[in-house]
Length: 420
Ligand code: HAM
Image (cartoon, rainbow, N blue to C red; front, side):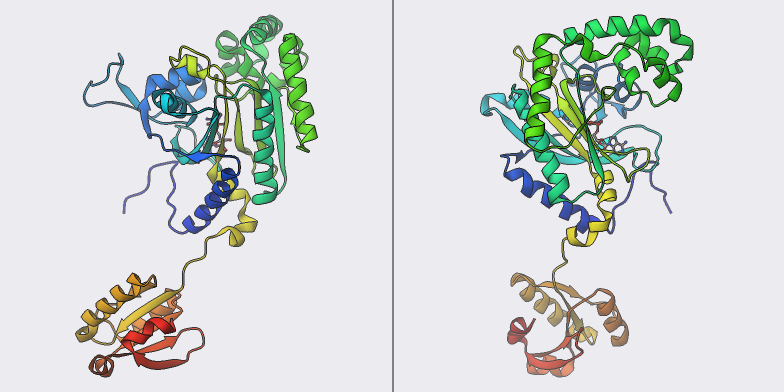
């Protein structure tokens, strides 16, 4: 038997549950004028290098990269990869199609993402995201609106238990430049107490040090200058306005000054929905504003944007208690059972007739004992079985058995449709 690749999962049994959750999210989004798009799973590596940042973990360590067989691109290197996230691809697709798009464009898509990480509970190499983006909307009030939309989704529609919304504000690049200088100067003398990763970050991307989970690193920067100390007046006003508006919209949130997120395209608002029930990998939705990504990907003008991604595996895990209510119900099944091989063709015709009339049908054609076929009908959870033997074939009838009550009657084949 072939094993599956490390860090991926089969989903043989849970799809009705997954589809039920996805349907609820989609139904909610339609009230906010979101529409569905689709983007490729394969993209050029350079899209993510430019979009997410060379120094991010996702780009520097986690991409599944392959050489395109034919050097057919005009891009210098023709390395392609399995998408590690959906935002860069959505923005690329937006830029290619923007002449036909009216902004703000609120779009969503869902599907597999790929990151080469050490697998553990809630962390897969192939996982699924429900990705939401609003492209072309500069007002910080859009951030409040979208966050409120997510809070309603999680709290009221899906009834996620025990979650916290964490928010931070990263200001603008000038604010961060000033902060970086002060932060690096503060940490230089403490270099030896930082972990190896943070020592590299100190050189290349010091903001990410705030994300470190090591207690030693956290202690080292506990008294460091704060990013908010370096906000311009505009940043201060926007951050204030965002907090006020969220409060007015009755959104409960915690400010986490160390929340910086792992991708470099963010500016201003960043946020994460965190579950108390998930263990180490506890963020089930994360996102923020990314006003400069379009330009990083070649746009001549700034196209402000905001978005987030829900980790579907993690969401599915925390909704376990509501599984039954969220699972799509299977349709009523009718099982057609020819008693001998001689009735197989008739069974097939009857199955075709019933499916044309929108009935869900299974037909048991293999040559096994009738007792075994009835057992199988039970295992398949059929509500009805239609039995066809010599007599039924001769008289154009069928014997219908209600598998729940055990009652049965013989009716004309034509009338069977009226009974099930
Ligand atoms: P992210 O924080 O990298 O953001 O991923 C979003 C969510 O995907 C995480 O909060 C988590 O629930 C889930 N996730 C990430 N990696 C894994 C993994 N290895 N296994 C299972 N689940 C995982 C983004 O991807 C951004 N593109 C979000 C965004 C959209 N920002 C703006 N627009």
